[in-house]
Image (cartoon, rainbow over all chains, first blue to last red; front, side):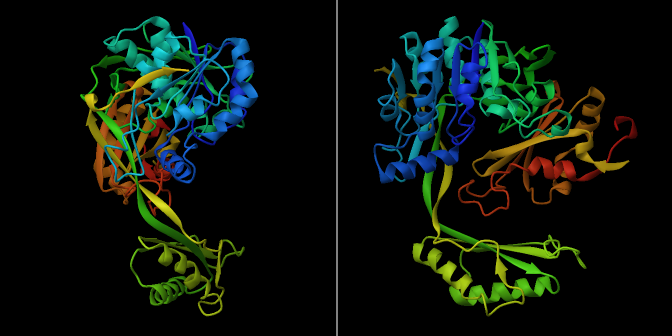
Length: 401
Length: 106
């Protein structure tokens, strides 16, 4: 059995989770997911400003605090915090570090700000086989952070479909951290989720696993909390990945005294193509929210719409009126509706001019005019697209420093 | 009896590019038999009128249904002007809708 923990479900997750997982009990490997579709865009903008950046900076802070502790305890660290610059991050760490590269396909998709293929588990496994204490990757599938260490530990073959699928399910449960242990859980009133602990998968040689967490941590691991996370961000029951197709309709969950057993998972060969995460710069956006209180809410909204349209034109404006107001309300807040307006435009000057136009209404519009927060100068926004490429167009590599 | 769906069902939702996914599960075999018959694509669209192009998948082993709401989020989280651009609370919205639930499940 190999104990694989998770200490991060996104870039910005609980900073102390790494230490909590290392000090809370036994572990063999500690993983962390830092990359969402949106994160790739944020890192892409970091990289535009400074080409030495492009990785998750919070992971470096965690390593300053915890790398010695992890090495001391013999716990290996496997994270995708490398983002767009795994080598740059790897070179900042004082340990035997391996990194995974080859996911960056910007040369193939020059129109994109970021273009990264979802790599799989085998380069992670290769780094570990070569003795890496820390493995840093860029865009790999989230579940690969668990599949790679399990495959290296047990010496799985590339066509061990059921084993790979079993570990993929464990990885899917772990990839969002505390969402597996009672965080964001529909039946949250039934358990104490004040500070849920981070999850651990004890993976067996056959790919089955026990989902658990350290003793004394908050939250709970139950069939319901694990089911909730299994349903997160999935599509058809055939869950396509770079290493295996995992059949979610074969998963069996069983309550266990220390958590939940996952077994029975069937796998089959993966698709011929790899998915690519593309982020393009879409233009510029800006928004504000007008508060409409008391009488004539619809007419007040109509006046603001007319005024803003006259000032900057109608193109690219999206309006929503949230009728959160109640008639004859006992508090001012309950008497108020919210009128949201967003502008999306190719022209940064127009996004900035939106602010000025909205604020110039302050003494010249509906009675009770105010906004929840003043509009900013506007920010660039990204457009996400998935693309697919043949496997032979991607050369993933494991590099040991 | 007319009760919020969330009385018997849990849900979790999220984004994949411009699509939203919405998983709904219940906690007994009897409840799944009911849910599977009740929560069709048409019923989901009736309860969440913002949903248009919807795929539905059954996961009886998890007593769950998974819906993909295509195009709900436009060009994805960074560009969407939707109130909840990552569809994080779509499931809780659905759980709050009142539906006719068999009395023996309550």
